[in-house]
Length: 77
Picture 1 (spheres, helix red, strand yellow):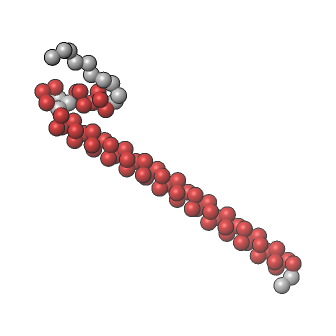
Picture 2 (spheres, one colour):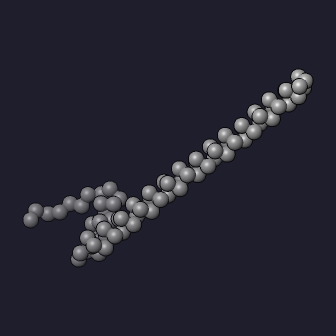
Picture 3 (cartoon, rainbow, N blue to C red):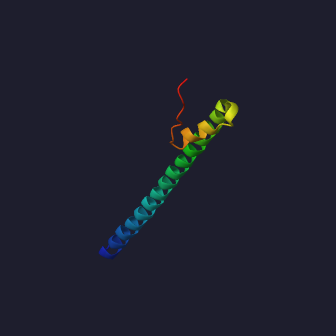
């Protein structure tokens, strides 16, 4: 094997490894996005199912306020 052939092999292997690592990185980023979207869907479904059960007489407004981070103030009992 000549030095030219060895150099071409090293360059080819480096290019292939770079391509494979880039593709793996892109796939892992997409998996992360899919998992985040799945968590948001589950959280929304849980919130909506809790809203339908806890709605009571006010149409679920208190559940919505809790979901967006506001605390409902209630008068003394």
